[in-house]
Length: 159
Image 1 (cartoon, one colour):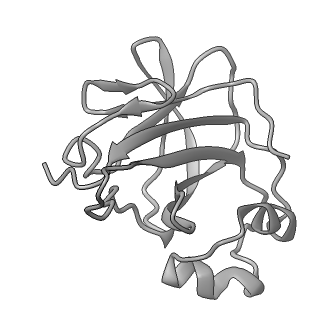
Image 2 (image 1 turned 180 degrees about the vertical axis):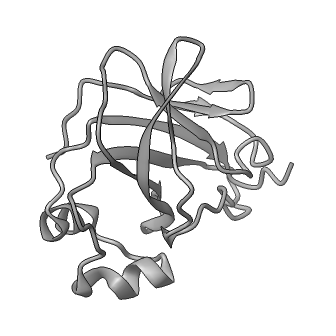
């Protein structure tokens, strides 16, 4: 079970993502800014963005996030130059009838020294499909997330 008491602050430009916020596909097209409120982070972090419920799609797995020293809306921002192990791609739920909201979960983990994608998960990370995140956490030596958040995008929202 994954438990965290801290919210990951997710910003798409000036749009602040509160848990479960419904946004347009176009709002979440570019990689967001990530931060935390209410805790002081030091060290290096790994961010995963996972889409559900129609299977598990890895929308991002970005390493080497560190505190930037900057703030936005009271949030201490994190930054990375990494585009790996899996670069960001925005939500793109399929057109469905009836329309159905798809959830996109952000999980921020403390990154172990010498982090590498475990061999058993390289295929799922490269293909971005079917990743078992709980098994990935165990195999990669990650702890529980230090912060989490999620947003929703309506299926068929092509704007």
